[in-house]
Every structure is written in structure tokens, then in C-alpha cells.
Length: 351
Image (tube, rainbow, N blue to C red; front, side, top):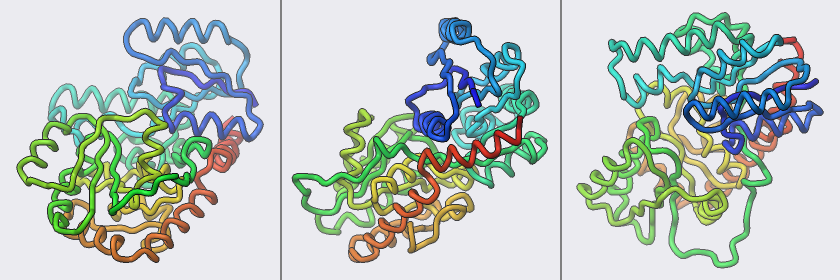
């Protein structure tokens, strides 16, 4: 099978990297055709890349990006089945999660329409969880037969267990990711405040984004002495930070999107054999079992989050148990080879 992986996607973003690698590991010839970037120049680079690699394909996959017009362009350029890795809804993200536009606004209608049109254009649509599949089915009136669930996973050549030569002192709790409402960073800060008297406990928060300034102001208001903010890190430094952590945090927000996704950071942490604490959601329950391969708390509840962190601080056996269980879940379900194999079975039926 020959597939063109097409669009303005970032080939280094983990979602795209895992799917491309996974398909290749299963014997698929994947031709990457991207003009990663923004603006008209990105589309010009994309067209040049397409022209340079213009051969006969069994199908085209439009890789994940925030740009939806790649789907329309792919439909114009290719005469084979078109698979769109939607990954998430712009309408949901901008209107209800990040709340950047009002639900009744013209712009909200535009985001709904562009997601709706891409769903109609695509032969198949990739999403990351079954609850996300159900959301697309109901919100954009998509035939369920068009929707494919494909886990995000993590690249084992990047996210792998490391032995640090200089073990740290104290207890380090790590959060990394974009500062958006679904992450629930405010609840992490409030939990940190409740644990401010716990000896040698430190929260490292890595990232930037929409709510960064608000979270810095909240931390200042709460006067939390055990929280350190860090700028985004290159991937090799992030991997070291994960390796140095005693516990990795997932997401804790109160938006609908929080209930529908398993974030990249969860896959990356379990691939590195780290215990993960995250919100108890329908999406997370699709892959994980509480106290077996993950530890769950109530979403948007700093008291319960602090309680579960305290449990991990004082129970090394539990930490090690869920770290091993999480790694086993990764090996069984979340490697690129396994994800690629399952996706390939579905794609063969699609063509």
C-alpha cells in the first residue's frame, strides 16, 4: 500500500510522528507531503511538495493540524479515498474549551461549518477516543461508519525509561503542556497550596499558552512556595524532566473536551515508566484502570487532587505498581507498531 501523508501538519508533532512511523513499520510506503507553517507560503510549499512526489496512491491521509483547508485541497488534488486525522474539533476547542468566541457568534458558526464540511469531504475521519467519536457523530451529523478511533501513543525512540546519574532530593511532581482550560492548571496550583507544608515536595510546571499569565497571577495570589514555572523545553530537555519526576500529572479541567481526550503527556509518561495522576474521565477509562496502571482523581477538584498526590508521596509501592502497569498498557496498546497495525486493518477495508 502507498499512502500520501498530506497537509500543513508538523511531522515532528507526536500524533503525526506515531502514525507515520506505525504505518511504515507495518510495511506501508508513506510519502510525506507537507508545507508545515502558516500563510500562503505554506500552501505554496505544500503544492510544490505534492508536485514533486505526484504518483499514484492507494489513499491520502491529511495529517493533524489546526488548518482545515488542507482537507479541501486534498480533495481537489487526489482521486483516491481521503482520510482526515481531525484529532479534535476546532469548534469545540475555540468555542467551548478555550472560550475564545461566544457560542452564538458568527465566528462560532464558521468553526462549526468548517469542521462539518471537512467531515463531509473526508472518506474516513480519525479521532483519538471512542467518546470523541461519539461527539463528532452527534455534533457534525457524521455516519459512525466514517469515524475511526486511533490512539495517540508515543515514540519509544524518544520517550523511553532513563536512569539518571544524579538522583534528586525531595519529591518532584511534573506537569507539562499547553496552558489551556482543559489542562486545569488552576486546580494543580490550588492542590499545591494545600500541600505547601509537605516536606521537600516541588511542583514543576512546564509550558506556555492562553492561560499562562492568569496562572502566574493565581500562583502569586495563592503564595504557593512549592511551584516553579518553566518555559517550554526542547524535546530532549523535556524527556530529562520526565525522567527526573516522581509523578507526572495529566489534565484536570472542567470543560467537555477534558472528558473526551487522553492527552499526549499521559502516553509519553507511561512510555517512560512514570506513575501518572489524572482526572477520572470516560476517555481515560477506555485505556486505564484506577490504581492498576494509573491513579485517578475527580476532575476540577483540588482537594481530591491533593489527597491523591499525598497518597502517592507516602506510598512508594503504589507508585511503582501503577508505573509498571502503565508501561505494560503502553507496550500492549500504544506503540507506533501496534497503533499502525490496527489503523492499517481499518484502512484496508476503507479502500
